[in-house]
Structures are given as C-alpha cells and as structure tokens.
Length: 174
Image (cartoon, rainbow, N blue to C red; front, side):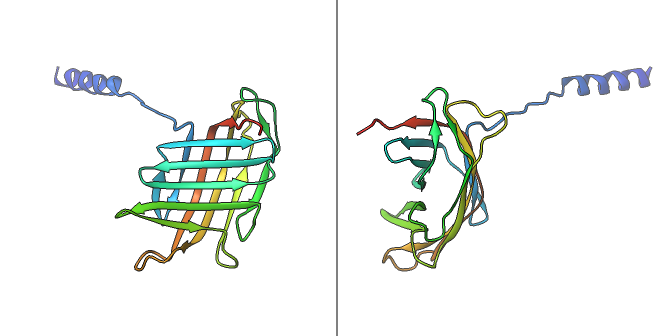
C-alpha cells in the first residue's frame, strides 16, 4: 500500500510539471563589458532616400545606436526584405556604433567613429523564417570614450550582440 501511495505521489508531481518556455522575440541584447545587457525598447528606422539603416536599443539611461549605409531593402513596411550584409565598424564612416549613458546627470559617449581606436562588426542576416517587415542580425564593438569627464571607463565593449525581428519603420521621403 505504501508503494502505491508513493508511486501516486511521484506521478502527480511529474504530471504537474509544466514546461514554460518563452521566446524573446523581438530582441536586442549583448554582453556589455562581460555582463548581460538587454534593451527594454528598440527600433529600426530605414531611410530609403539615402539607404541608411539606424538600429537603436534603449535600457534605462543607456542607449546603443548603430548606423549603416548602404543597406538595400526592398518592399514596404509590411513586406520588407533586406540583403545579407556585414559592415566593419572600425573607423568606417559608412557604419558607426555608439553607446551613451547618463551618470550623475552627465552623459558619457563612446563611439567607433575614432580613427585607429575602435573595432567591431555589424551583420544583417535574413533568418530562414524571417518575419516580413523585420530585421535581424548580430553585432559586436569596442569603442573608446569621447569626452572630457575624468575617472570614467576608457572603453565600452559589446560582445555576442543580437537583434532579432526588430520591426522596420520607413522614414518619410524628404
């Protein structure tokens, strides 16, 4: 009798287990200075007039902005398709990554737009099941501090960055 009760308890425990899987889609995240950084808000804006894509991720008082040119996107806001492309973020005027944060009321700015002091890569990649009207890819960058505030970190480093199915907004033609 004790064995049957024990068996029933084990079965009831196993039956009550539930697999709660949630997917972070869309997403914008990376490892910032070896700690997980996840944007709570993000967007992708495409200016067809000059083929420029601006990806932005925001977390509290922190902001990551990556600008790339030329990005070839065909279609409209409901069915946009982009060409797989990789941009070098090392002293490249056509591809720039910046990170800014507000600390004690002062804005700290880090940028890859500094000659011979930055490096990184931004890759736009169509997923085989990419949702139309969205953009996905990966990024990494190491950028120096731009500014005059003393006693701040000299560099910021983003590794293993990913953005997945970020909706693309098309800027109005000027």
